[in-house]
Amino acid sequence: MLGNFSYSNPTKLYFGEDSLKSLNKELPKYGKNVLLVYGGGSIKRTGLYDQIIKILQDNGKGIFEDAGVMPNPTIEKVYEGCQRVRENQVDLILAVGGGSVIDYAKAVSVSAHCEEDPWEKYFRRMVDVDNPIIPVGCVLTMVGTGSEMNGGTVITNQAAKRKIGHVFGENVFPKFSILNPVFTYTVPHYQMVAGFFDIMSHILEQYFSGSDDNTSDYIMEGLLRSLFHSSRIAVKNPTDYEARSNIMWTATWALNTLIAKGKSTDWMVHMMGQSIGAHTDATHGMTLAAVSLPYYRVIMPYGLEKFKRYAINVWNVNPGGKTDEQIAQEGLGEMESWMNEIGLVMNSRDLGVTEDMLEAIAKGSFILKGGYKVLSRDEIVDILKASMAL
Image (cartoon, rainbow, N blue to C red; front, side):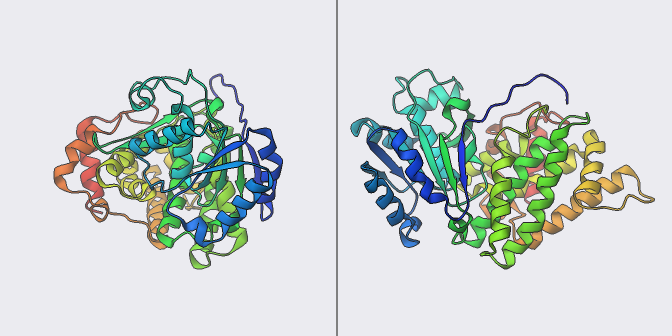
């Protein structure tokens, strides 16, 4: 483990089939007015909405609603949420949904009392929060982002065609999160497997960095093996509790800052995927899937030892009689087979990417330095082209 670091995660998790009851423990800690944030209304069809409303009423809360949070939440929607918070003197934002809903809730929490334009302050200048923050609690219904236990929020500016994430500090982490794997059963297959790849990408973008003997790498290899095993079960039987519970727990640990310790981390897949999303509004996990293999094949020679380790320790590639490059390539081949097996989108054309978008997508992709190779803008364009030809 190289470098110096500190670790703290203030989010309290309640996990399991009875976890929703724990809302009764948390709600008394906050003021009277609660803003209930959710997406397109699936929580009403499943009955979860009614359960939460009853718990809020039983705890004497004033309930205000902010529905219609879209899969790639926009800054315009954030402005609306901020107005609701101020008008109703909200004391707690309760986000019920997946990563987009929780990201949105956190963006509203830091923006409602911001005296500047939050897009300019938080997503362009990347300034830290220096104003009052509305606490956020979560009831998770879709796994993938890890937003239930981190300070990240990703917001889209449709006019500027920019999709930008800001990773805030622990003061913005959700105060509590409720994780019941049963709540994820009704997620459509397409969204479910997109979430699986988002989990994988979070792990890989931390794993493929550094060359020291790092405990975090061993943890990540175990998380990946668990994910691949359980994802195959969940694709065949989406209501397999053991598989869905393992995936939910893996998603949370994939991006709650623990496995990043001692790592430089490489987030270029997310930079490219988010830029694709800004131009196409495509599902986040699918944008990551489309660019991952082209990207990893470009950087593999620069981190060959780690790619070899990945092939052997995660995919059980037999190294006998093979060169390091052959082993590494076989590992990526196993990864590609798994991606096809669970039904991921492997071609960015299928997400709406066209040749005339490539330069703008590349321009919108922040170039980061944590990985094995710092890309040029031309290399990003080449990777995007390769993502259209898989």
